[in-house]
Image (cartoon, rainbow, N blue to C red; front, top):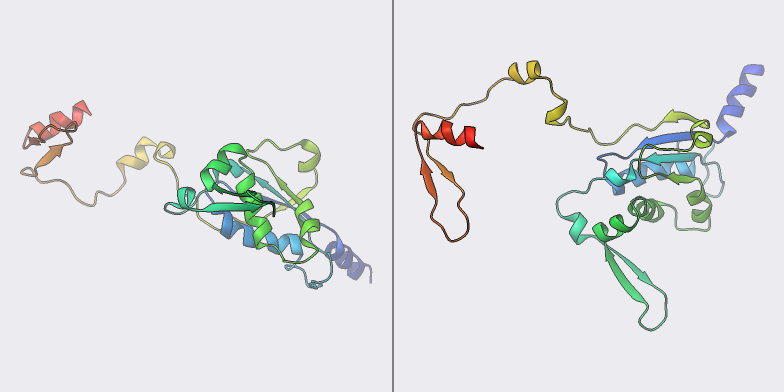
Length: 201
């Protein structure tokens, strides 16, 4: 009987989750974050009941967008007055406030009812990994990232780079063209000059 009581307390309690948004798509991440804000991961979820949890999102200044979305995607705002319409691209908004793109993505992905302002109060956004200690004390679990973060070339050791399989090698008679300044003809490199050009670079 006591065990069932503990399960009920853990289900009804508001858990604090941590999500690392580094190199993650803000729109796909917002859909997963909203699931925890609304409480759709709980067995007692109901659309009209407020049973969601808190979500702490870090590294919002390192979010990633596919292709040219930074330049093409825009956020519109209208004050409902004459001349009150404005349009801001994603990169401009990100430069002003690194947390604003993620905030607007979660706001759009949330439910379109009167519970949405309440859910947004439980969303805590931070541009980097510096989170106040009083907030970190409440975090008890982590939300898994939706996209695999690739390793950078600097993170590989020399031994790993040396043992990396070589898919192909340039033939000796391969011709390389050095990109010239605008208005000048290309310089053709062949044979041994290829190795000399590689050393200069």
